[in-house]
Amino acid sequence: APAADRSRRHSIDGCGVDGCGSGARPVFHIVVNLSTLLGLDNDPGFLDGHGIIDAATLRTMVVEAERSYLNTHTKQADRQPTRYTPSKKLINLVKAGELCCTFPGCNSPVWKADIDHTTPFDHRNPTQGGQTVLTNLKPLCRFHHRIKTFTSWQDYQDDLGHGWFQSPTGHEFHAAFFTGRTLFPGLIPHRDPDHPARASLDTARQKRITKLADDQRKWDEANPPPF
Image (cartoon, rainbow, N blue to C red; front, side, top):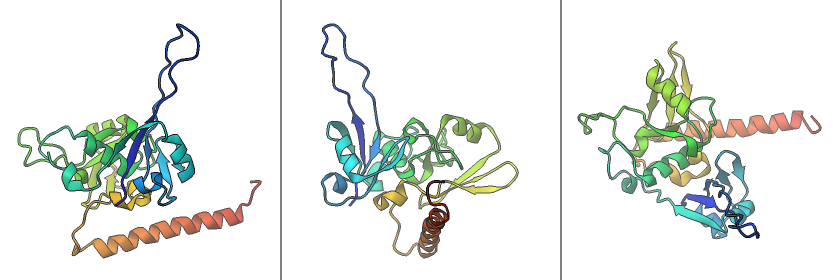
């Protein structure tokens, strides 16, 4: 099964001059299938804050990286649903599944984002409020987290990970159409085989992906370089 890899690439310590000290180590967050790192396929990966990168570049970047392997089995990540603060494993699984802030139109880097409970956590009775599980968590940048918390914006999230936002005027907006679940199908939350919405949601999702690819192809054909 595909696994996400979060990496930190370190600079080389020292500058070759006595007393210069070590510089700050830059940190990059990369999401990539383990099978790609092992050379079993050439699926692309994602560099947080930048976008999709090819397999060859991925392998070069993670040679000297610290790696954190994500288990995509959500039951293992959802072991503490009544605890307000999610575990590091759950946080990374949530962020890898979205790749950026989920507020419509925002592409702020996901590893700088807050983790928001879609259905608010009930601190007085955790078993009754929104629980700390994969299907009730999403990343929001600090600005949009405050917008959601302190204004009349409403948000919803289904058990397949899809999110919607409703503005104070009643207009509804879908969260990002392209997510980590699009790039890494192994991150899609487990669904029962007889889920009543499975077929229709899968069909609608595939139609959106096909239409986006077709629109991009038509635009490229109509606007050959130089632009």
